[in-house]
Every structure is written in structure tokens, then in C-alpha cells.
Image (cartoon, rainbow, N blue to C red):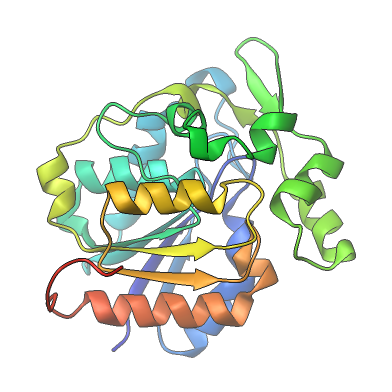
Length: 254
């Protein structure tokens, strides 16, 4: 089976973060699309115009560009984005995969999730600085390497950290507004990263308990598994896409 993957990046990042997995997925016959969210990567949307609603709108625009439904994949903050986007245009989404990503409920924001007790070890929140008007969050290269690329070779970690930019604050403070019944109709799975310094594994597990997934795959990886565990993540994405294309055989997996 071949799938259409639409990959959504997280905070401070851009579509470039998925480069290590895009060619391996395409080599297996899959269609792979990445995007820059408004104000991220090469997108020049002014900070004051960047909102969670604009993020979700951009994703739905990409989903509408091809007739087939997509396996919609969100990394980190991208989990909030794909949650809202899937609720807005569910007919375009075959399944959802959260890659060490936030999974909010209706009315929850990313910031709300980081403030849960299980998020206390989050090294992004511990080190970010908010500045400017409209506000953006910034993270030093040193803190980025420690929080996001702690399992990557030092040279690769520094190169990736240097590509990251400031993150508009508005989308991480704004709650999702979703119909939970609509989201429940879309199969979801999760890639948990056991060495994650950004979204602590305990917080990932809590979100999985609160939003049961058809399947959970655990990787010995940091918050950037596309870079620190590329082959393993490619295998997980393909396996999960195939499994979620089949009817569920019972209850949610452990």
C-alpha cells in the first residue's frame, strides 16, 4: 500500500526539518508533502498575523491540493495544528500520526499542556525567552541542542539549531476549538520518543492515555527523531499508515 503523507512541523522550525525522511518515504512509493506554517521557515507572514487558525487553514489548503485523503503527521507543536486542521477538514484526512507531539482536547492550548505536572522537565519552556510586540519566543542554540537534538551528532545538532527561528507566541497560547466526535472518527496513532527533553515521555504517555491511539510506537530518540532515528521513524510512519488504513480489530492498544 502506498500513502499520501502531509508532514507538519513544530515550533521554531519549518518544513525543512522533515528532509531526512522525505526521500526514503518517496523511494518506497509514497507521496510526501511538507509545508511552512505561516511565519515559519521561508514563509514571510508578519508575526501579528500568525494565529492557530491561520496554521490550520494552511494545512487544509495543502490537503485540498490533491484528491486523495492524507495521512496527516504532526511533530511537536504540529500536533496541535493537525488536531485543529483535521477537525476543520476531516474529509481530507485518512488518519493522524502524532510524532512526539502535543495532543490537545477541545479548549486546550499548547501552553496548557506544558503546564501539566508531567511537563515539568520540559527544557524548551525552561529556557525560552519571550520578547517583542507582537511577542515571539526565542531559544538559544545551546538550549536548542540540549532540548531538541540531544541524541544527534554535535555537528548535525548545531547545524539544525542554526536554521531554527523565533516562534510567534499567539498560536501556542490559543486553544483548539474542535468537535471531539469528529476527531474520534479519524484513526490516530503516536510515535513516542523515550529520550525527549522537550515533551517529557511522561507527558507524552499522559496525552496518549487521554486520547487513546490505535497504535503507539516507542523510539529511543530525542525530540527530533527524523534526524536522530531516521530509519526507525520512516519504518514507523509506513507501518502506522498501513495499519490505520485497515479496520480496527478491537480496543485501543496499550
